[in-house]
Length: 181
Length: 85
Image (cartoon, rainbow over all chains, first blue to last red; front, side, top):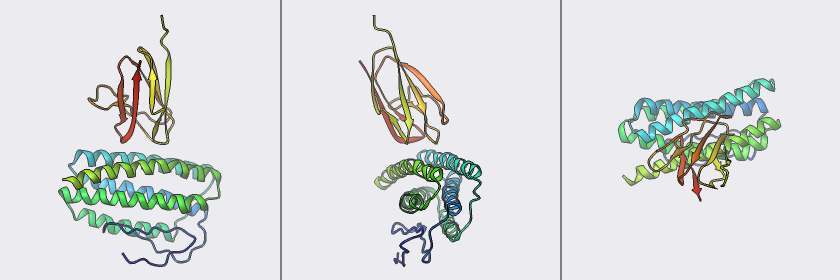
């Protein structure tokens, strides 16, 4: 994938992994506001829930289905907490260029996943989960957390990182198993 | 005669704390979920016992007379060990 201009500030996702990968080329952006951070956080979680929903419909592999169920449960829990915190802080998540880009990329990825079946689907889904979680971890640690001003929102994001890293480890374990076959 | 006691394993940040716990035969371990998401505590080798999913804030306890390796079946990379002396 061709590297494009990467802003030194603002949020970006740049991946050079397998074909089903979301990428972002934000224009030279100003720092995200907390409402924008909240929107990105909720959107990123919802995207993975949606990917898992496709897996639940298409996969018959018990390990993949178990993983997908965990993704839905965990990311729903994070969204609930993010929404509850936003309500408490009287912050309305604000859709922005990044959330729109994430959703547009996810839409493309969903179409690619839906076109596959059987073992090819399982492999594509898990490969995407590895890439997606790597990208989200990177974005949360390097941009969302440093750019968040509200201490409680920052703490929530920090508390989510271990879950994202565990998801990544789980996906990588499945990826390894699939690559052995 | 030794009195049985109760120890605690905290589940937080996607890990069991402590990851390895040593108890006397007949002691109780309470597993408390202090994390953001659901977890369970399941015997790893033959799935002999399980807490079933614990929501954040929920706890589950068991008396241990045998050592065990356990894991969270929802997050299979999360593992712990019980040593019984």
